[in-house]
Structure formats: structure tokens, C-alpha cells
Image (tube, rainbow, N blue to C red):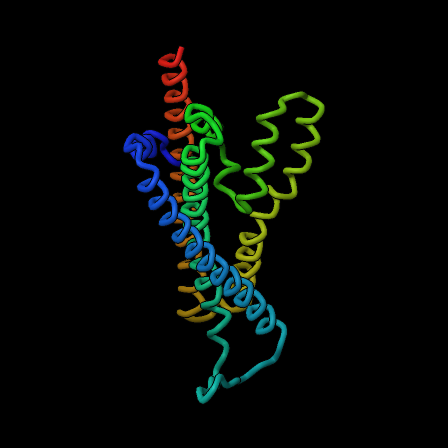
Length: 237
């Protein structure tokens, strides 16, 4: 979550051209991150399919362009490392993308006077573990609707709609566990297999630390934004 105090410094310039230029730069960065995120997602899917193919097919060699591989046993041993590396980067890009989307919403709303600044700040005051997960867009939309309409009946059904989106982010980790189990049971017979197994686990642990840090940062920024909105409300009162 973006710290709105920093964005208020930009708005304090009171120069629409400057704000529009900054907004354009953020939009360009958002597009670049989105394109990169798409490429990494495709590669992650390719890695999973390649692992499944090598697991079930009896392939002793293959060629790519003019390069021939006569011993492919090592490939499924290192694919989990490649896969978790891609997932790690996807999570980092998702966090950056989320912050940039919030920045765009805030600056665009302020620039085109769609909402009062205090309301824009208050819009992002709620933050929890859901915001750290993917897919961000669907989760963000649903949680906003829940916040806007807190009635118990609708709240219950909206939570039910959220459940599939909460399960979806677990799919990459299920694929990782599947690959690790296979490597441990079938390919844990040389240094490459051992290293592939433990390096994957090490990167996954770093990913858990990163997600924990993101969660705590989100919570703190949410509190800061909530306090800022209350301060501005008192000043206006």
C-alpha cells in the first residue's frame, strides 16, 4: 500500500502539469511491469509443463536449434529452482504493480477532482493478507465492495465469491511441492538433485519472509493512511 503522505507532497505542488507528468511516468512503469509479469507467468507455466513431460516421458536426448543435449536427467532436478525463482519475481512484481495501481488511482482522482483527497486516502485504509495475494485486481475489487456494503447477508455471499480467489494463489505452491516431492523420491541421487531440492526450499523460505514483510508493511501503511485521513477530517471540521 502506498503511503499517502508521500503522495500529498506531490499534490502540494498544486501544479496540474507536474502531477500529470508524474502520473504518466507511473503509468508507463505500470505497463512495463505488467508486460514483464506476463512474460514471467508464461515461463513459469512452461517450466511446469516441461517438468511434467520429462517426468512421464522416456527422453534420453533432445536438440534445441544446433545445441544437442544427450543427458537430460539433470533438467527436472534444476527446474524447481527455476520455477520458484520465477514465482519469487512474480510476487515482487505483483507488489510493485499493486502500489503503482494505488498511486495511479490516487493521483488520477485528485487530478481530475473525482473525489476529495481525504476520501481517496480513506479508500485504501483497509489492508490485510488478502492484498498480498494474487490475482490482485479481483481481490481488490471484492474487498472494496465488502467495505462499502457491510450488511451481514451480502457480506457472507461476497466472502464466498472471494474463496476461489484465495485458493488460486496457492496453485503455484502446490506445483512447487509436487516437483519437490518427485525430486526427493526419484531424483535425489546425486549432487544436482540434492542441490536442486534444497536451493528451491531456501528460495521459498526467502519468499515467505518477503511476503511476511509485505504484510506487515501493508498493515502499518494502512494505519498511517487511516490516521492521516482522520487528521484531515479534523482540520476540515
